[in-house]
Structures are given as C-alpha cells and as structure tokens.
Amino acid sequence: MTEDIAEDDLEEVVENVALCSECDEYAEHQVLKEKSVGTGKDLLVKCIECDYVYNLQIREPLSIKIPFILTDGPNSKRVELDIDDDEMFLLGDVFQDEEMLWSINQIIDKSGRKKKSIKATEASIISALRTDMVRVKITMTRGEFSDSTSMLVDYGTKFSAGTMIDYAEEVWRIRAIHTGTGRTLKGTVEAQDIKRIYLHEPPNLEHFEPKTPRERRQAWKEGRLGYNPNPELPKEVTKKRVTPSNKRKKKKPRK
Image (cartoon, rainbow, N blue to C red):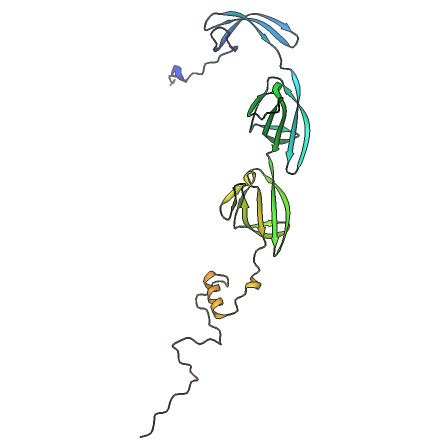
C-alpha cells in the first residue's frame, strides 16, 4: 500500500540563492553566463522572483590577521589569527585554537571603543577566555592560617556549599562560594560562575568529644556518636526522682 504524501511535507530544494539587488529579497537565480576570475567567478544571473538580470561577482574572502588576547586562568598570551575579512564577531562567540575552546569576552574597534559585535576588518583587538576548562580560585583555611591556590576543572563542573571535597590529597569542607555578587553558604554553582571557593578542614571529632552528660545526650541526638536508642547514663549520674538503692531507710520510732 502506498502512502499519499502531502505537498507541504515535501522539502523544496532551492539552488543558487542570492540577495537580489532589485527586489531586495533572497531568491533563487538562474545563471545565464559564467566566467572564472582567479579563484572567483563573474556571473550573469536572472532573479526567478522578479526576472531582473544583473552581474554578480563571487570572490573568496581575503585573509587578514587580527590580534587576540587568549586568557587561560592567570596566564594570558597575545596571538595573531588568520581570519576571513567578511567574518563577524559577537560577544560570547566560541572558537577553537590549539585544540582548546575560547569564548570572546571583549571586542575593541580601531578607535579604541568596546563593541558587542564587529566585522573583522573593523576590529583592533579581541580578548577571549578559555571555556573548555575553568580555573577556579581557592582559599584553604586551616585553623588561623589560610593559603590561596587554584584548580583546573571541566567547564560546567558543579560545586555545592557545605559538602566535602577531595583536594590536594586531603578532605575539605566547602565553607562558602563567591559568585562575584557575594558569598553563598548554600546552593550549587557551576565552575564558570565561581570567583572563589573557600575551603575549611572538616572538624576533628576527637577535638569535640563530649565530656559532660549533657554534651553526650546532645551528641547522641545529633548522631555524632552513632545510633544508640537506649544510651547508658554515666555511672556518676543519678536520675532525678529515683531513690538510690544504697540509701539507708529511716527507722520507725519505737512506741
């Protein structure tokens, strides 16, 4: 059995599409005459929509050199990349260089002004940050001493405040995460949005061992002493409203 295919379901293939200089629309063109010029072509074309006939020159874009500042964490380098002269750049564009991905974060035109988008021929210098890997700054605090360092992680790696993390062959607790707008003591943040992570060494339970009956009861409630539904009271403690068994009974007076 054959299926009927609606005309709307058929994909129309259009060739030789160009912007017509007469009707100012992108339309299919009929090539009437063609001449090779170097690596390009000179064409005599006819617009299918308005029947306008005109000459169309097709040339390979010229290659120009544009200086880029590529920043990978604390390290930056200046390079010159070969770019087609008709290339457009936008803030946030991602490109590849030396098997690494870079995201454009600043564009400067030839008059020294910052731009959100620019044509290659009008660009003075473009800055980009490495985006496939992110360098996260870290402050490690141990007691009264703090050290600053950084670690390289994959783009999109998530960190949660209050959780434990293995770093420098030790276990640390993420005390807070700075996102640029302030510190957060809870929540999850992706690496590219983090300005700094603050690590504290986890508490040593030996330093906080409960010493009094009250501290022990509280420790059991918090689960720091494991599961113990019927904790034994220390020997030196006597429950209230309970008469000690070794207490002497009062003798009744003789009549």
